[in-house]
Image 1: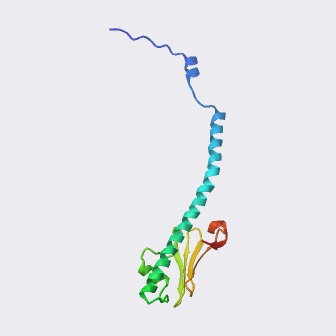
Image 2 (image 1 turned 90 degrees about the vertical axis):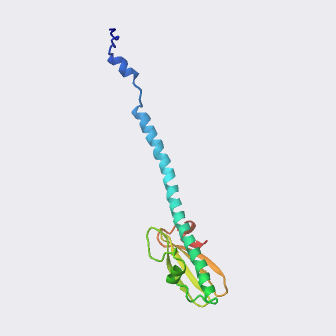
Image 3 (image 1 turned 45 degrees about the vertical axis):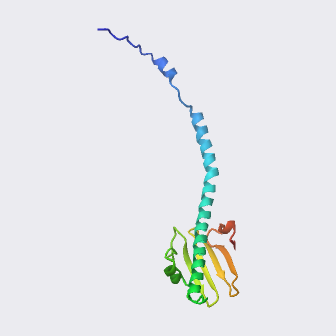
Length: 157
């Protein structure tokens, strides 16, 4: 049998052959990651608020279409437009208060007018109103953060 060659252990050679990062290099990388996070996180939070407002806009527009459907079924009379009737006519319209998704907060009407308000999870309230002359108006009110509604306390959309 042949014997295998013996490998000599040299501690000095092993230590000098190991690679790695110095503490300064690691701190520099952590600093860069921190700076990038500080730039990116506010942008993501802003997008969340915009998404919440978009959800409320979509909801109030669906409610607007449903209100017109209700009026069409009632010879042009908007008196039956209320939150319960909107939900009955279109079950995807939520009318129960929620902190995680938009819902219809207010739905009021008369024979020739209606007002429907959706509340976004961030507190913004988006309203569509129909005047007696048929003119539609859209308004937004930021009740909590005072910075929703395209970064204003109130406005139109």
